[in-house]
Length: 285
Ligand code: A3P
Image (cartoon, rainbow, N blue to C red; front, top):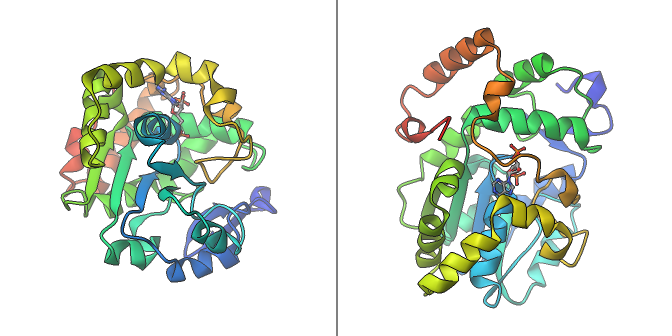
């Protein structure tokens, strides 16, 4: 059940919190969505680098594809709207695997999943909750920390989301990326994405795309990145001003107390004990 401070902003669907920007009718109708074989999904838990990845992908292939707004963002007219898109579509989503429209699975659509270490994700989400009027008010980091661990936040539990997608990480049509790897060596990841999409991007272009996708470039170009201000790749806001905060690895150290860190580690180790991908997560560079 959602709590009183969430009234009017949050509703529950299949046990997961959504903002009212995702209407229950739309969520109910997702099962009927007509996926196309050449659709590409850009999947993330919130605050994992969705906009960064979308920025990179736009630069790699904007002549072949357009990035739509998230499939779960809007009301029931959304499916109709996406149906009308005539070019090849890159469709963002924060849905976990179990809620993904079955036609994407049947068509074996390409899927790019971006993940970020959950401590930095939690911190980033905390600030997002504080600044985003579409999300409930949170008074303290301590309060948010508990909600995050319980999965009582929008899009549900980080752990469940990651695990639901990890099960498919080795499928041929899935590319599983980490935010921290993008920070470490962006050109390498740009190349990987380009190959995955079947494109031939020159080394020069890869370098240029990487330079133009740095945190400072993207932050400075917020308005220019998409000429339509209501276009969004995040189902939680269309205000890009809220996205580019710090863009670093390890900001969790400025928020977590030693006790919180210990509790986090205990829960992480328990929940992720069978996860191979979890072993690849890095918390500092
Ligand atoms: P912080 O809040 O830690 O700064 P999403 O796009 O999924 O909402 O994720 C937002 C997070 O990605 C924010 O993290 C934001 O600063 C970071 N981010 C956005 N663009 C980035 C870039 N070009 N390089 C590094 N981090 C970026």
